Length: 240
Ligand SMILES: [Mg+2]
Image 1 (cartoon, rainbow, N blue to C red):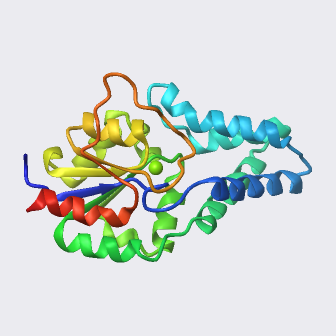
Image 2 (tube, protein in one colour; image 1 turned 60 degrees about the vertical axis):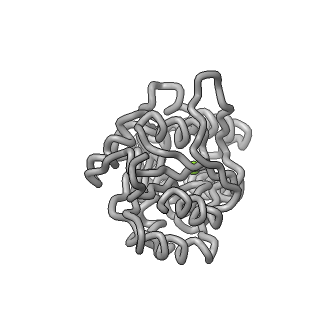
C-alpha cells in the first residue's frame, strides 16, 4: 500500500455536528424573513421541501443545488417574490444562521494542528453555499489547517460524484493512493472516496440527517471510528 501522506475531511457530522439544532436554526431564520415580508409558510411543507432539496443532488446525477434557486423555491411556497428581494434576504439569513449555529468540539482544532505536522490536510464538503462553509471555517478558526477547501457548490457536483473528488485531487496535486478521506456519509464519503482511489474512514460520531444504507456491491471503508479522537491511532498504524 502506498505511503499515507494526506488526510482529507468532510465537514458536517465529521468535524462539526450538523443535525437537528442546526436545521432548526435555519428553519427559524427562514420563517423570520418570510414573516417580515408578510408571508407565512406551513412548517410541515417547509420541512418536506427542505428534505427533498437535501436529497436532490443524490437523485439528479450528483448535480449540486444552486443556492439561489433552492431559496427561491422556499420563498415561492409562501408567496410571490417578483423582485427577488425576499429570496436574497432569505439567502443572507440562512448564511448567517449557518455560521451562528455550528460549533466545534474543543478537542478538534488541536487534533488538526497535530495532524498538520505530519500530513497534508484537505477539505471537501457538500453544500449549496460555499460562503457559509468558508466563513464558518474561518469563524471556528479552522480555515488555515487546510491546503485546499473545496465545496460542492463551486464544483457544480456533490459527493459521491467523481468531479467533487477530482477537483480536490487536482487542487492539491494528489496521488489518491496516498490519501485518506474521513467522513460520516456512507454514500457520499465512503463510496465516493473509495471510487476515487482513496482510503476511507467512516466516522460514526454524530447523527447524520441524511442516511444511506450499504448496498450490495458497495466498497467497505478501510476503518470505522466512533469518535474523531480515534483517528490518530488509525493513521499511525498505517503510517508506520
Ligand atoms: Mg458529513
